[in-house]
Length: 365
Image 1 (cartoon, rainbow, N blue to C red):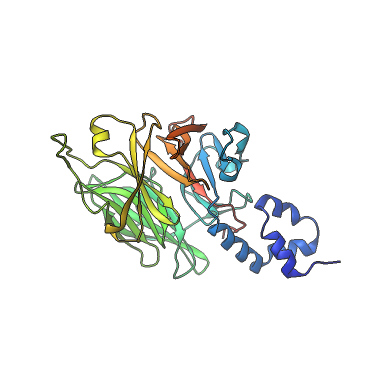
Image 2: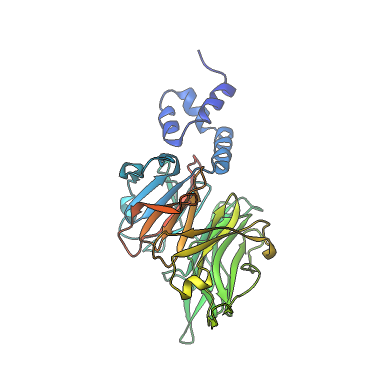
């Protein structure tokens, strides 16, 4: 006896991707149901709206599941799952971004790969390049991956170096999916006065974002995926370069990092007095109304986490704890209630990088 499609779908929607992959092998009916476009659409929408996600780190290559770290349970090594890597690209790769369950990778041979770490499926992207594409060299000074809401196709954003009249310059290129193929084009140059603090872009509200400073002012660079334009959003409304209470001044803005908090942009940075006095104190801010700098709101301080230069927000647990990448050396879980942190993973390579993603059944295309 077969269960009705509606009942079966309601059951399958509550299962994790790993379990669904097993269920597909039970019988043809189950396989057809799980593989149907309607089910995949429902499951992907549910996965994206679910705040519980995973974090991928590159050295050692592994993932951590937010659901696997219980609130009152010490983090254990078995929470980390090794990922069987694709042999053709195991020698060298770079994280370029994540979007709706897919992770975009760049390889030493300059290939781009769309990879679903939950299912193991991947696709190699070979873009059609225009004559003015000069940004083939790595490393990229920024990168991002998202969906163009006007076309529904994927977009890869790359900040590349190139040489012009014996001068090294920087430009933004995009690889876009149009009519079943990927095309590459140049968007604009980035002035030499712009400093990028975080290579991987953060996706919010149809835009990709990077923390930066322009002409000594802290800003958030925002790339509109639909309009293919870049603009800047002031950080906390102003560029603070003076410390009147201490009688000191800073000739440069303090670096900061970007993440998301309940669908909003958030930043972590050291306050000015902590920089000067070498305190291990950070501030967490959130942009309550997208694109409005006056809506930046202080949420909390992060204290006692250790002597680190930067904390990259990776996500929040259900109880409000925060997971961060500390200086690309440790993945830590911080409790605002206890003002304490514990190490979830030690990263063993200077090139180590971490990125959040959701577990989904989406297929690379």
